[in-house]
Amino acid sequence: MDAKAIWLRGTERDNNGEKDIYAFYTTSVFVDQVNGANDAYESDEKGSTIDFEYFLRVARENLSAAFPLRFSVFGAVENRHTFQIIAASDTYDRYMRSRYKHELNTGESAQENPFIEQITVYSNIDNGIGIFAGYNYYTTPEL
Image (cartoon, rainbow, N blue to C red; front, side, top):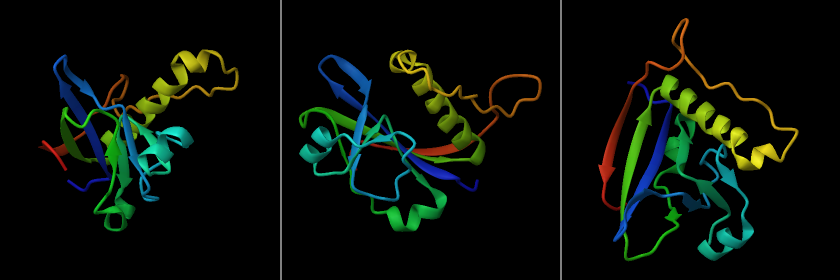
């Protein structure tokens, strides 16, 4: 499979169970900005410039420049973190990016903004909704 992008997602486990890591921080200019926000308070505290929600995405053309990738995550140091490195096909990548943008534009904050654009979630199924796609992943306890 020829990966379109590399996605990095994570989970955090504490005494209350496991949950998705919702904030990643990095100074890398090679990480896709689809889910990035300039949050000066959080970013300055973490020593980075961009706050990313739920994942980091690096496009294929930036892979050699982006790695090794330095990042930090929001969460307690004593909690156990697990990361998933995903090599995404073009179809999976297009679907996940459009799904994230759709969720962002239909959330609570979107209801207060009259200028939000409707985002159509990518589909490659004729006469249907969804995708047929592939990805490879590697799970690691710490990076």
